[in-house]
Each structure stands twice: as C-alpha cells, then as structure tokens.
Amino acid sequence: MELRQLQYFRAVCETGSFTKAAEDCYVSQSAVSQQIKALEAELGFPLTERHGRSFSLTPAGKLFGRKVAGILDALEDLRYEAEGVAMGYATTLSVGYLNRYDGWEIQGAVAAFVARHPHIPIHAISGSHDTLYHLMLEGKADMLFSDRRRALNDAYVNLHLIDGWQYVEVSEASDVAWAEELRVSDLQNMPCILIAAEDQEAIEADYFHDVLGFSNDFLFVRSREEGRMMVAGNRGFMPVETREQTGRSGSIVRRIPLVGQAGQLKNEYYAYWPKDRENVLIREFADILTGMFEVQE
Image 1 (tube, rainbow, N blue to C red):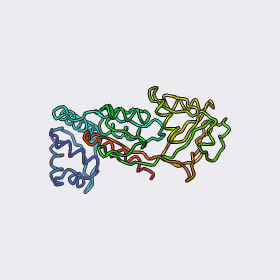
Image 2 (image 1 turned 60 degrees about the vertical axis):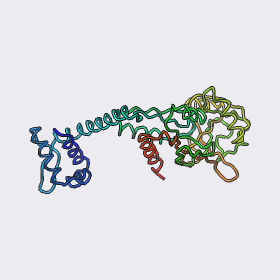
Image 3 (image 1 turned 180 degrees about the vertical axis):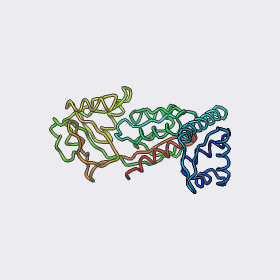
Image 4 (image 1 turned 90 degrees about the horizontal axis):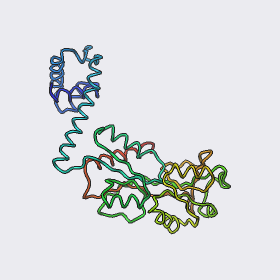
C-alpha cells in the first residue's frame, strides 16, 4: 500500500471525480485509475463501483476514505512537527485576543485550525490590550487580535480585520436601559465595569479615563462572564465591542450603542505579529481568521 495510492483515493473521495482528483494531484486520470485499481487488488475488495461513466463508493470505500483522510492528516502533521524539531520551526501556536471584544470569530478560527491540524496544539489567551502586548513582547503569544491603541509598528505585520462598534451593556433595571443610544456623559453617575488582570487595572482605567473620556468610578472583573453578572445585578455598565452594528438588544442585560458627535463610536481591530517571528502556522491562522471576518460582510 503506497502513500500516493492513499492520496489519490482521498482526492477521489473529496472531489467525487477521477478527473478532478487527477487535476488536484497533478497526474493523469489514467494514473489515478491505475493506482486505485492496484490499491483495491492489494486490499482484496473493491472501493468503488463503476456505473457507465460515473462511479460510487462501496460501503467499504466510504469507510476506507474516512479513515484514510485522518491518517493522511496525521502524517502531514507528523512530518511538519518532525521538520520543526529538525529545523527549529514552530510546532505550537499561541493566540491572544482582546477580552472586551464580543464575537465568535476567534473561536471559529481556532476550531477551523484544529480541524486542519488536530495534532498541533493551539492556545487561545484572553487579556486586556496591555496584557496581550506584553505577552507578545515576552514571546508568550505568537499573534494578537486586539484593538489599536498605539501607532502601527513597521517591525510587525499589522493586518486590519474590522472596525469594532462600541456598545455598553446595562441591566434592564438601570435608569438608562431603554435609551436608543448613550453618550459617555449619560453614564457618568454609574460605575464602569472593566475586564483586566490585577496588574493591568490602573492601565485600563487610565485608557478609559484619558483617551475615551470616562470619568466614572471603575470596578474590575477578570472575565466577560463575571462582568455580565455584575451588570445583571445593576452594579454598573460594561463597555463591549463587536463587528456587528445591531442596535439595542437583550432583555436582562441590554446592549446599547455608545455614540459621539459623529455617530456610533468604533475602534480598529488588527491581527499583529512580529515579522521576524512569522511562520507558516501564524500565516495560516491569519488567513483563517481573515476568512471568518469575511463571512456575512
């Protein structure tokens, strides 16, 4: 049983066509047919059934095709990992993402990456902007998905993905729960709930005070879920961002657009990574993540 036979059979299963499989494998159709016949002869049972010019997979062929796909994926991951050890390439991936962003795209990209490379560990790390920034500087994160707070650095790949729309989440028991939109000044008598690690609390408070203009008292939580529980208890409001401009939503926790003089506020989001540390895993994850943000655009 040869590797190319398994590769050809996988291509036939995926394309449903000997012609397309041959094109994908850069060989002739007769070569694909001959190798699959040789594979069937070695196995001692048919994988396909011919119906004139068409064909179908036998029950054994369907099972064999599913198992072969997993084996070939595992072999490719094994080859990459072994090559990585030999050549010093990355064999794991760590992705940091902003804890204030409320969207499914990072989870979707992680799931898609794992589906492609089930044997390559990927770690997703949530944090505030500066927490992620320091993880990158210390080499503990290969890539960041975060908002833009600093000037773009030429030493990094700066891949713009979206402009995140700014909202605040408030309890339905809040005095502002039924507002169509809110300004920073409308919230000045309410505590502002921020997500940050203990050593980043002062930095987050300074950013929201000095840059975004919040003069509120600040309460800190370690996760978005903890923050939403505080919001539900009407202990304050929590700023969040998402790529979708959806207007008011929710019942117990209501999400209301945060606006300024020019309309709803928004913030630029990028994927960042150092150019001198780029590798194929980072580039592939960046491509997957870009595709996630292109969905429903």
